[in-house]
Structure formats: C-alpha cells, structure tokens
Amino acid sequence: MEHKNIKHSFETADLIAGYLQATLSEPQKEKLFEWVAESEENQKLLAEILNEQNLEQYLAEFAAYDAQAALIKLKSKRGTVKKMARATLPWLKISVAASLLLMFSFGFWLYQKQQHLAHPVAQIKKDITPGGNKAILTLANGTKIVLDSASTGKIAQQGGVVVTKTNDGKVIYNLARLNDSAPGAGGDNTISTPRGGQYQVILPDGSHVWLNAASSIRFPTAFAHNERKVEITGEVYFEITKDKRKPFRVLSEEQMIEVLGTHFNVMAYADEKVIITTLLEGSVAVSNQKERVTIKPSQNVTLQRNSNTLTVNQADAQAAVMWKNGYLYFDDEPIESIMRKVSRWYDVEIVYKGNIAGKTFGGNISKFKNVSELLEVLQATGSIHFQTEERRIIVMP
Image (cartoon, rainbow, N blue to C red):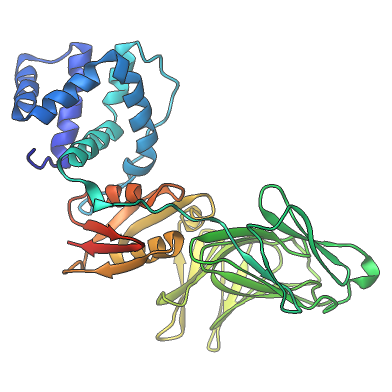
C-alpha cells in the first residue's frame, strides 16, 4: 500500500465520519470511493470500520490511543494539540460515534493503522516492557535491601528510626523512640533506583520524595538540629515539610538548593549538559560556587555545566513533573534527548545510524506502555525510524 501522509489520513477520517452520518456531498463521496479503490487494504479497513460488531472495539482502541498519539506534535507544528475529552458513548448510535470519529485523534489513529499495515513499525521481534517500582536501600552499615522484592511492613530499624514498606510501594521513615532520635543516631541511608526503576520515599521529617530512573538520594535517618541536608543524583521531585527552624538543603554536584517548605523538581543526570531546578510551589534559592539566585513558582534555574552559570527562566512547572505522574514528556526536544529518557526508563542501549541532527518532537506518552508503542508514535511523523535488537534500539532517519 502506498505511503499515506498524516494530512491525507485526517481528510479520510473526515470523509468516513461524513459517510456514517450521511452528510457527504457528491464530490466528497467520489473522494472516499477513490480512497477505497486505491488498495485492497483500504477496502478491508473501511469494511472493518463500518461493521457494527467491530465499531465498539475500534472506538475503544483509538480512545485509548489518543493519550499517546493525539498529543504528539509534528516537527513542522508548534501549536499544542489538545487531548480529546473522553466520554461514555452509546456505540450503537452511529451519529454519536461519527462525531467522535471527526476528532483529531481518529485521524492520527487511522494514519497509524495504515502505516502498521504497510510497514511493521520498529521491527520489534520481542517487545520491551516499561520500568516500574524498583530501588535498593543501602543502610548505614552497608546492608543492601532490594525494595521491590522486600515484604511489606518493617524492613529495618536504625537507632530510633523504623523503616517500613507500604502496600503501595513507598518507604517510610518513622521515629520509634524520641530519645533515640539524636542527629546521626542511625547514620546515612541511600536509596537508589536502577535504569528502568522509580520509587517514592517519605523522609524522617515527613517530606515526600520521588526518584526517577537511574537516580539516588542520600540522607541521615535523623536530621541535624539546625538543617535538613540530602544529596541526590539523577532526577528527584520533592514536597518538603515546612520547618522554619531547619532549612532543607539539596546538594547535586555543582549546586545547592535551599528551601523551607516547597514543591520542586531537580534534573541532574550526569549525561545531560544542564542541571534544571523547577519550582512548583513556595520559594527556593539555588547557588553554585559563583552566584546565588532565587526563583518563584513556574520558574526554573538552569545550570550550564560547561560554563558553571545559573540562568532563571519561565517554565512549564507541570511539564517538569510529568515523569512523576506517569508520562514521558517531550517539549520540541532533539531526538537524542528523547532517547536518553527512553534509555533510562526502558533500560536499553541507543545506537544512531545516519544523520538525525535537527529532528525534534513534542508530546507525551504513558510511561507504562511497551517501547514499541512509543516508537510507533515517533515514527508516525515520517522523519525518524527505529529497529530493535534485543535491548538495543537503532535510530535512523
């Protein structure tokens, strides 16, 4: 079947919807019949869509698909494509179903289905599953506990602090006896996530912490009397419990963040050229060896590693924490940046063949889809292609 571009798919979706509603003009009917006559695959696809027994399945299929595909912005587009509102539809009412078909997501869904028929996307022999709640807790004495396989309930006790694992996969530090909660009583603990892992922790002061893939946090089981200090690598989101007597400080390589009580995200992966601190709520001060800046909600601080300079920018704060909320998010990013995220979350090796410079993409997709579904969405733009070999993804123009 000849290659169908996305614009053609949207036009075809509109024609099919009009056919279902019996609103097509004679010229429009001719266009639809021309499309049907182009190939046997088109004939089969239209027959499937018009079959009432299949209609419910297809409605459910592309209603679920829109969460990933309908939000992908083509490289040539810069506007935001809004996600289709979902509704409970009486599928036997063809006019209602046709109204749904008119929406943007069906055009993209139809395009994807055509491309899937024409070209096996990503040439995946064995699909790669997404990451999940995985982490290792290293106690002060060096003992390592694999949290994803540990039983729920109490997993350790250090000084006056009891460490427990909840049914929903969080680790909580609680004071067992106040007289044993002196600073340093239990030593430092480290929680680290592997590639393909994430985890949530509640620190001894009640602050909530989310670790992205390939990240870590080191903290004392009992904070000092005058400050709360932690060290991180990778990407971590914080919701800090307010305590004016004890400022909360986050160390990440070349910078330090100071807060009293606030919500913020720090992206400090070693393979990225920048460290980005994004504020959602409250106020934070970020400093390095040369300067100190303060930011407000919906701003971020970018630390350029090569020049060691701090820059304050307006930011989409919610976009910065999409990873915590279950999505991989791309904001007109180079394909290399996107594939670094893919590599960390799916624990895969990325290999490039050919010239892929200058290719950018935007949108989001659920983190809990298999990698083939993500690659299909990116490949649907027609400007990038993929092939997988075991746990290796080859990226090609």
